[in-house]
Image (cartoon, rainbow, N blue to C red; front, side, top):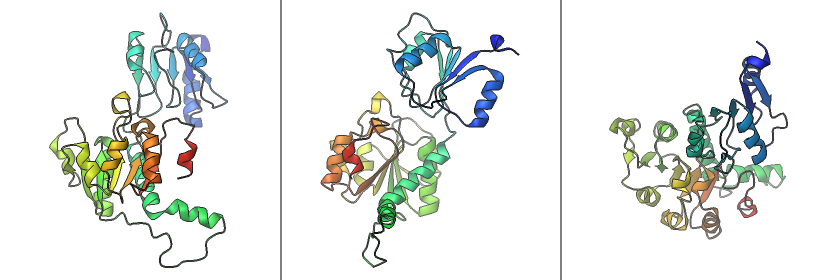
Length: 284
């Protein structure tokens, strides 16, 4: 089939080689060989001139980009779990379908959650930094003790696919007492998978948990869900884990909590201004 008869597709970042090969076989495809985030102008041009655009979380497709009379693009097929970076309402107004890939990364994200939890609690990154800097003086009983994860109380904010996967690991792997809050109606059996107790409010989770892990939607409705007030409700020896979305945490308030040790620590996979990260956070 010639390229003239194939749908025109724009892929905004580099994808795995096997996937790119399959796309190239089926479509008239343009790859972003430089693998840098496209500019708003480039994203707009792609939507105007391609049949399909395949964006990722680094592509903010907001109303200003979609402010056009008509678009050739019929689908924004997002490479990722969420669509918070896409103005779905504006896309619908142009008759553009927006898709994403739910559940593909649920187990991987749950693994990552526990990696961050263990690293923060057991001070793994601090130990590695000391070792690589040739500053380690050998083992002694009180050096970088950290705190254990096993048997502690885990509080989940959001109890969808990822939250449930984390709950299974916590209960069966670490003997943790798990409490979860999710405002969405959910079948009772979802909570019974690992003896999870359903909290009546997010405040209950923040107040009672040794580890608070975020697994809720990171859109405008939850912007700065974890602010100074929320952080002040956490126990001073509790840890905050975020693999859901940088906008969920008010980072200035988090800095203050870390500086003044009103919480024990934090494990972050996501940041508000990615790829730019507050310099002060790097120093905590």
